[in-house]
Amino acid sequence: MAALDLFKLSFLVSLLSSSSNLVKRGSGGVAVFPPTCNRIECPSYDVIQSGDGFEIRRYNSSVWISTQPIDDISLVDVGRIGFFQLFDYIQGKNNNHQKIEMTAPVITQVKPSDGPFCASSFVVSFYVPKENQATAPSAKGLHLQRWGLTYVAVRQFSGFVMDDEVGEEAAALYASIAGTVWSDAIDKSHAGEAATEYIVAQYNSPFEFKNRVNEIWLTFDVEDGLVI
Image (cartoon, rainbow, N blue to C red; front, side):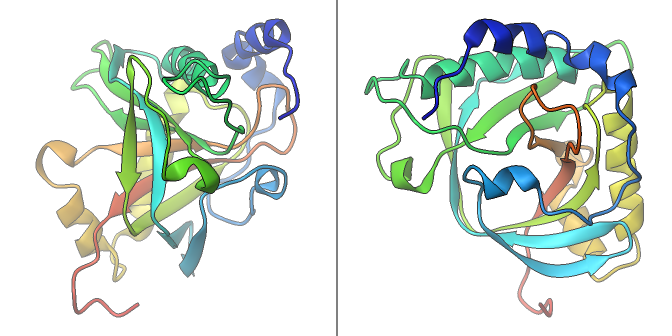
């Protein structure tokens, strides 16, 4: 894996929230295969349907290394904290002292709070490369998530992720799915306490300021009888 200048990385990550006004944000939908996935490993999936403002994907089984839940009012701040915990992990600060290749996307699972000034709960994760999944090491303060076959509704947006826009993008994804054959399955999977949960997926390194690709994910289960 190419060496990274950690000082530059720290400096540029600290600018993420302030740099967003330099980037023109694209309209939502799904139209771009993330260019990052042509350079580094990403989880594999099949596109089941492309709709108006959304895409339905079926992800193959995958493994993620994840932070413990972090309570905060800012996804951007939590993303910075979680990124460095996970970056240390792939640099060898794990139980096997093993270096692991960087992957994409970096995902943040979001459990929104009940109010604008209350802390939400966030879990930040890196995808574990296929060659490391069977023997992925553990590490203090982190845990492994093993996903089986997973269905995901997806909406893309560009630019740097901003705290005041991710909720709007998630709401737009819900709205675009309403009335489709997928809406009942998604509603059932997001009932009760999980009603407002979603995932933010970020594909670009903090060094990149053009052609950024981000996604909102809604994971859901598919019941027998739903035609795919």
